[in-house]
Length: 232
Image (cartoon, rainbow, N blue to C red; front, side):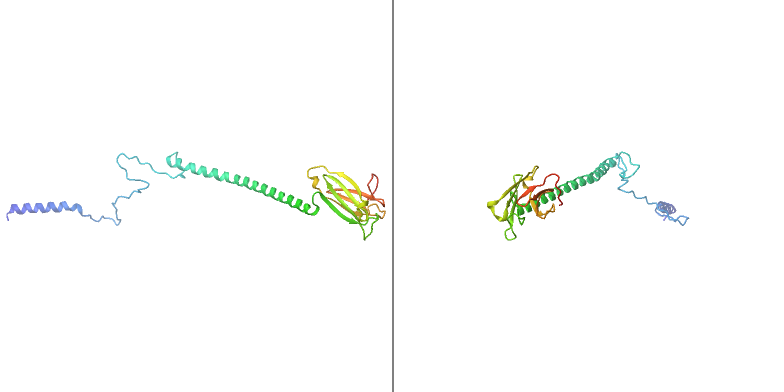
């Protein structure tokens, strides 16, 4: 091998070694370890820009720095609608509750009225009729008491007395005429007791909250006259 050939080979080897030195990483003169790796990007928040692409950071709807962007406009109506619904719901609930209470009260009132009318129909019939036996001293006795019929006939109060139970000697007493709605179904009742202290049982008639007194004169009953004192 000639001297020129050796020199040329030596230059080639030197060139190759120097060229390859760039692939060797030498340890730095410090104990800190360096990372030359490029930091990863958040693909959701910061996508890799492409030529011609405009990047806009997506902001949260609750971010106070958010201006009138696309995200804010899309979420704000939903929150506003939820607030309006929350405010409207109590008012609707109150109205429905009041309506249900009114309906319940009306139903209970109707049932109560119907039940009272039903009981009166069973007890007094139609027309309203009340009957009772009593010994009042008009040709009667405990064995043959007088029979009384109290009748509301088309709002007219009629009292029928059969002394000693004898219908041939019946007496009829005309009472007052009743006025007002439903008064044709008002029951008329009576009791017999001494209210003027003469020892004879008198006839006390009850029409709802009204009381009529008929005094016993020994043969029949007379309506109470002004100035007469009675003790009910």
